[in-house]
Image (cartoon, rainbow, N blue to C red; front, side, top):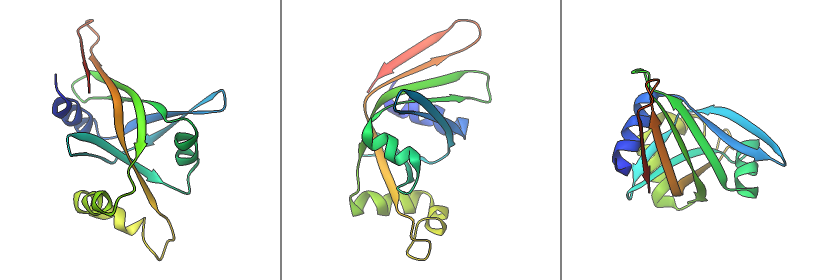
Length: 134
């Protein structure tokens, strides 16, 4: 399994759940945006959100999602902020609907992160298990 396989699987899941730490308490919320860019998996969140603040304070995270085929994926790693204009342009090209949420009129700014030191695990109810590091 390679990073592209991880990305495709997660994309097919649709919604995924992103977990951060708030002090010593876990916090989980649904996310939907991902992209594969420069051989990295990116995701984003509004900089006004608690998830952004928590990620900046402790960049260790975990993602979990269920695929329509019954398998599930867990990804853990370190979230690295990429606030370059080049990346922002690619995000808006990949998901144009985000321009409705993050623009000068709303005042909201999107924070884009890529996964570093990632470990992905795909499993099913029969005990089959694949993993990959990226």
